[in-house]
Length: 113
Image 1 (tube, one colour):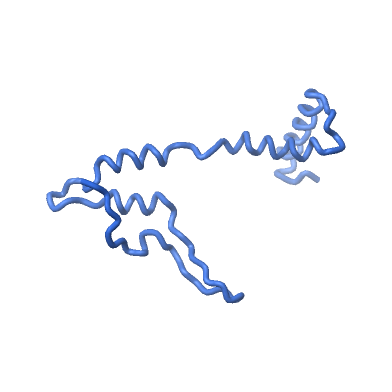
Image 2 (image 1 turned 120 degrees about the vertical axis):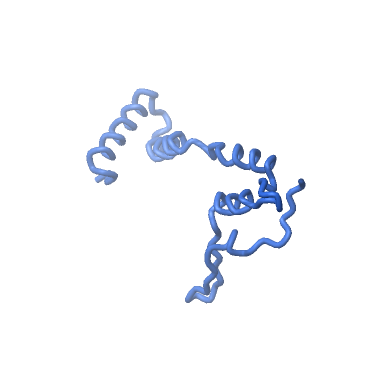
């Protein structure tokens, strides 16, 4: 059976709509897994899943990682350590700065001062 959006209740994908004090309209959307949970729970008149193949595809796509936050965080920290004035730092100096940064973050519970 082919997946067709048809008529989908807005509550499946819109969590909240509101008018801000600055005059702007805002829409807060549901998380994507909420929408797919609703869609994939649809059944045929025989009680069978309406979209069994789509269910497998969506579940496999949703488990794919969107990135590695630890690696991205490391690059961000290095960007703060290796500035335009400090481009000639050796690898051991960068590692020392990173170690110092990590120890400060660990013992000060996130406060670098």
